[in-house]
Length: 365
Image 1 (tube, rainbow, N blue to C red):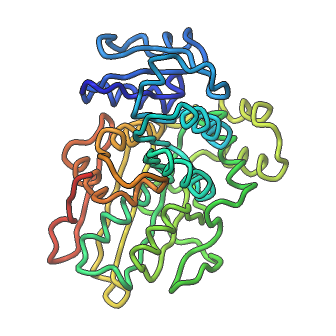
Image 2 (cartoon, rainbow, N blue to C red):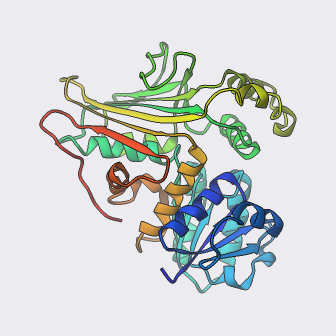
């Protein structure tokens, strides 16, 4: 691929993984970050034939290097996204005269609404939620539902999480989501109505008995339920580290500054092996035995997020300009099918179709 793809936040956990995924698939990459030194340290092990590094301050549109201004595929991995996506898009659209594809590993409904018209008027396609949650959760729901002859009346249930290190940007994103009430914490969708979850279900066998789950459905998964006319959607996030769970609960209550809270669970959390699962099940309302389920497993959810963002940038062709969710792209179930047989390093996907069905529908972006 001769076109250069720009990645922001390339010295971070998600951004560096995205750069690696792009290079592994033959892309030309411009990796950007605030510090060239940190970029060189984080990406120094990668071959430089198709990789360039550039300093870029997303809060200063004047800092865009000339090579960055020519890029027509941009992947936003810098965090926290709620603070940096706006300045990045402002700088991008202020250039004028170019069109392209913008991919964001994060995002929420408010961000999509805010930037849909500016992106459409400038001729840019904005793809938000090209990560895990939001992102792969919505993709898994759609892929499983495609294994049925119809989607009306189906029940979907997802469990997402595990034991992963907590970055400062990740903690800030969590606090922001709690304060802005994005998604549906503590709620499930049933017959067109969001209702309080009063009883937690047993965890799937893939999770250890010590893990804890919390009801939460992100906006992208909720969008999938609406698009597919599901009868029910129940989403749960899972934490496998008690120290991190306590930290998140305290941060939610106190609103404390993340940097002051972050170091405390590090030692305790580091004692346990890292894991991450996305377990999704879809079943018929009137025939529970008719069900499909899939399990994605890996050890590093940050690398997984980077791989999803890279896939979105490489497989998204020209579409109607404007902003929208990644999992709503036509044919996005192709990712789940592709990764079943050829997953990114460290990722595994198992699949069990309902009786009489062999696979979900496939498509290309």
